[in-house]
Image 1 (cartoon, rainbow over the protein chains, first blue to last red):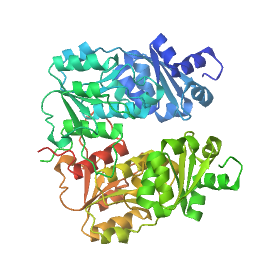
Image 2 (tube, rainbow over the protein chains, first blue to last red):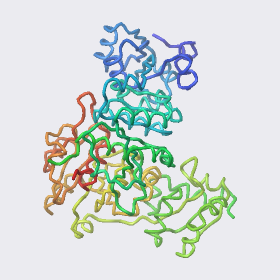
Image 3 (tube, rainbow over the protein chains, first blue to last red):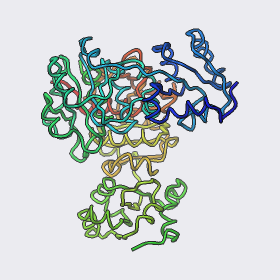
Length: 264
Length: 264
């Protein structure tokens, strides 16, 4: 049982809340039962350590047994150690340290994707996480993220994906302009979702490969990037509302692409 | 210029972050330019006071002029006073104290609504705010909220509605069971949005009056309430994803009702 909140191990795990440390070590933290469960199910070979309190080990005995069976180092800790390791106030008794996997745009394109999302300069962790979860829920083949965006391995993003991060490739560090060119070159239509669009969502053809392109929360997508896209699409909303937030717009576009809202 | 962070006025505004004080005084706080702008535009007669820093008064001179023209008391404050009044760390220089308006279910029903949302035991402020914003964006006639739910006049909810709170009636303090009965009695179909539903969203008839019923974030809608609804509807998602979060599911259902996703 780990009980020393000042140990090097605790400091080392805690330091993964810093982007620079994640980038140097290639590791990140997943906390909470849902995220940890998906990490073990879909990426057990990358789970380096699982830390669990006695209470959580009892509550999630199947999860802990699965981790042990997969050869993951399981460490029992007291509540104080787990809290000291975590970035959140209530880590729910479970925390895993996972090695990041690097996906490339080439990998994604070689699989012949039909539905993609490109996040360009998206800064809010909750938005990025919600979009990754939505992309997963609606069967997107990958999420692409530009280098000016939030780090998708930050604790807040990881938490808000609730495990979806392990379900589909997330490619990071991309240049927006070059990526739009590459997508077009592969016959993938690029659809900017933006309140200034003149094409309405119900009029969009979602039957052929396409990528939803989402810009920054505050200033949207720069004009030169919008101009580069195949089309700029607006979700029709009531006049009195200025805009939908990014996560809502992305969710609706993805659900539409998946046919989750299509009327028979 | 108000500069005394320890004044009774500052304490009085700050105390509105507490639900008990809001309920006793019938007043609440709106902060940030978008929310304040909508309050002035749609409910100027209920805006008792507007507090604004010198910098924000310059940045939003049209808004301040509009407030003055509407007879609202405008008080210039320094940054410290505004920060002390607000519940948030960055109130963006503008804060209004507004008198709450009480809407009743009878008022809403007498207007012959076609699209409603009922939030039952929804606890997260961000979710409640996002649903109110989505209801507004997709032309819902009102949002109904049960008495076990988050207070929609709490600063976090108000902030996340970004002004939508002033666009449509929000009825609070309702009993879920009685409300479902009343809606049915008025010929309004009640559609529980829940991952356990067997009816898929694309198969739902949204052409006649209906209410989306959203349950608690963690445990959903209790079985007895689901059973009382006309139908239990599921947004079709990929098997590997356990569920959509409440705000995402509500947004998709509302967008579908509004025809915002319908293919031509």
